[in-house]
Amino acid sequence: AMMLRASISNPPTTEEMTAVHELHRMAVAAHELPTPRLNRPDDIEYHTHTSSAVVFPEKRNVHGKAFGGFVASGAFDLAYFAAQFFTRGALFVPIGLDDADFLQPVSIGDMVRFVARVVHCGDDAVFRVLVTMDVIEPTDPGKLPQRTNRLMFAFATDPTNKRTVLPKSYPEVLMHVDAARRHATQGLGPNAVEDLATFFGKAPA
Image 1: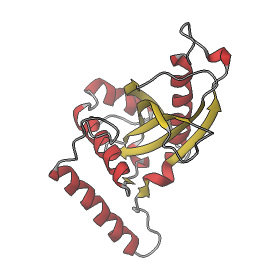
Image 2 (image 1 turned 120 degrees about the horizontal axis):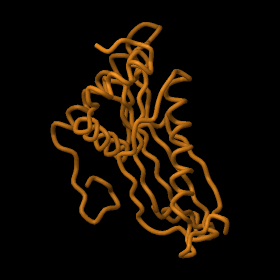
Image 3 (image 1 turned 135 degrees about the vertical axis):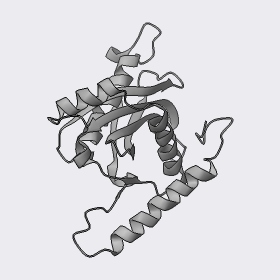
Image 4 (image 1 turned 120 degrees about the vertical axis):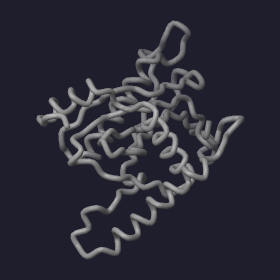
C-alpha cells in the first residue's frame, strides 16, 4: 500500500517515479509550444471536486451508523460529475468499481466531505476517479479530517477525447501511481473493447 495514513506505506518504484518525471517533462514541453497548446496536460487539482453533507437519521442502518448506500451513492454521483467535467461533455460510460474501502463507520450527525479526483487516464481512454470521504470535526477545524471511505471508479470515453492528467503534490503522485498500476493490471478484455467501440459508434481496431 502507498497510502500515507496506512501503518505500512511503501513509496513508488524508481520506474514509476521516472514515468511521473517524464509526465512533467512533457508538460513543460507542451507549455513551451506556440498556441493553441492542444496537448497540454491538465493538473489533477483542476479535476478535483468536492461535496459536503450532514448525515441525517434517515441515512441510518440497523447498527445506528450511516448505511453504505449513502456513501456509495454520494461517491458515485460526485465521480460521475468529475467524469463529465473531465470529458468536457463528450460521451463516456462507467465501466467498473476497482475498490471500495470502508475504513471506519460514520455516525449520525457527522459532517462529511466527499472529494473526487481524476487521477489517471490511459492511452485507451480508460480513466479513474478516486473518491474519498472524510468526517470533519466542526469544533476543531485545524484537525486533519478522519478518512472513512475510499472508492476508485473506472470510466471510459472515446480515445479521441482522452487527455493526460498531471500529479503535482506528493499525495497526488501516490494516487496517480496507484491508478496507473490498476490500469496496467486490469486491462479491458477483447469483448469489452468491442462493446466500447460499438458504444462510441466506431468499428473496433
